[in-house]
Amino acid sequence: MKNKPRYILVKGQKISASENDYRTYIRPVWAERKRRERESRCRDSKGVRCNKKCEQCDRNRTGKPLSLDKLVENGFDLIDPTDIAEIIDDAEMKEALRKAFNELAADEQHILEIAFQGKSERKSAAEAGLPRNTFIYRRDKAVGKLRKIFFKKFRPN
Image (cartoon, rainbow, N blue to C red; front, side, top):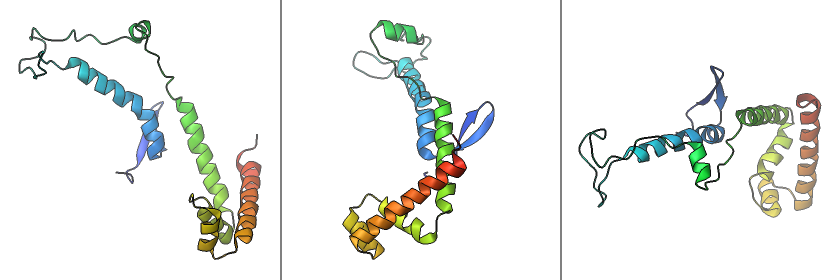
């Protein structure tokens, strides 16, 4: 499921999105769908599901959707929905960072790939086959070069 391409619909256009960005964007939609489903469930006092049509059942909930104003009046705090522009900006920035990363030399890319795996410096240096101080020096130099390429070419501001 992780390899499935994900898209976000913006102004009628499909925009490719990572799994994380897609989930961030679609989560409020899923929550609303689940809320509507829960609201329309018809159960008796023991929690047994009713077999009648919900519109004809005397135990039917009101079936009226909750309004956001009503929720606020009842003391619920609403979380600001993620702005789609932020998601798109993040995706564009990640793509620019990938392009900058690809401009690094192969050994610099390898050092950075090892460095950002979340391991300690000693374990990362051992994996790279370098002394710890040499590994740190090369990592910092590669990060500086990456930063320079990124801000020079891809982020003109």
